[in-house]
Structure formats: C-alpha cells, structure tokens
Image (cartoon, rainbow, N blue to C red; front, top):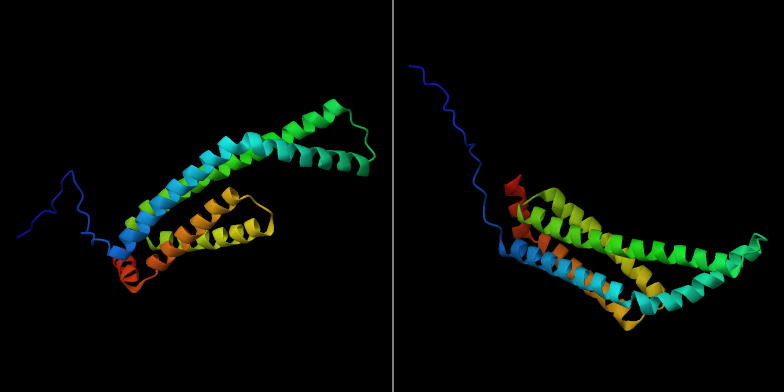
Length: 177
C-alpha cells in the first residue's frame, strides 16, 4: 500500500552532538578575545589625544620633507591641513580595524561553536595574521600599554587554536559536517 511522504511546516534537522570541553573553552577564549579587543579599541580612542600630539610632530616633519623632495612650497596652513588629514586617516583606520577585530572574534566564536570546520581553519589563518601583527608591534617602539593588548590577544589566539585542533575537537568538527 502506498503511503504519501509526510509533509509538514517544520523541517527535521539532524541531531547535533554537544561540543566537547575543548571547543567550549576555545569559544570562551574567543569571547574573551572580543572583550580584550573592545577594551583595546576604547583605550585607543581615549588615548588618541595624547598620541595625536606625538603623531602631529612626526607627520608635520614628514609633510615638510615630502614638500622639500618634490620642490613644493607649502604654507603653514597647508601643512596643518595635510597633517590633519593624516590624523583623520589614522583615527579612521584604528576604529575600523578595532571594530573588525571584535566582529571577527564574535563571528568565529559562533561558527566554531556550531562545529563548522571552515571556521576552525579561518580562525587558524587569523591567528597567523595576528602573529605577523605581533612581529610588527615589536619592530616599532611602543608604550607598555601599546604592547599589552597585542600580546594578550596573541596569547588568547594561540590558546584558542591549540584547543580547536585537539583530537576531541577534531572529532566534533568531523561529526558536524
């Protein structure tokens, strides 16, 4: 006897296994990374005024040197205008990278908690980029505060990647596909 295929308004999703402790802890570290990145962004925004004075001096020298190289005569007002533009670019880039960093931590936490293997791979790639960024941080003189956030972010990243590639995590990511 013929039985029609049951139709309904809801779809049946396969049961999802619970994430192992390694993945749960990695996700917690990702949320901590988002918090650290947010605090770093806030500190950056608060300290822009103090940093602005130091940057203005260097930017003014760079603008003046560029004018000399190109044999251009600039008035003091033109130099100030160019320095102001450079400041605005630096502030905008700082804000954008800070927001993107927080968003990436949150996105990777959500996707990894759902067992998406591509997210585990992307998290590893992002950690490699953070490592390159940390090398760049050490190549330039910084304040102690300017070193704390990149180092803390790197340690959160290395811990997260380590947990994501443990054998129990790998089984979870394989089973979620």
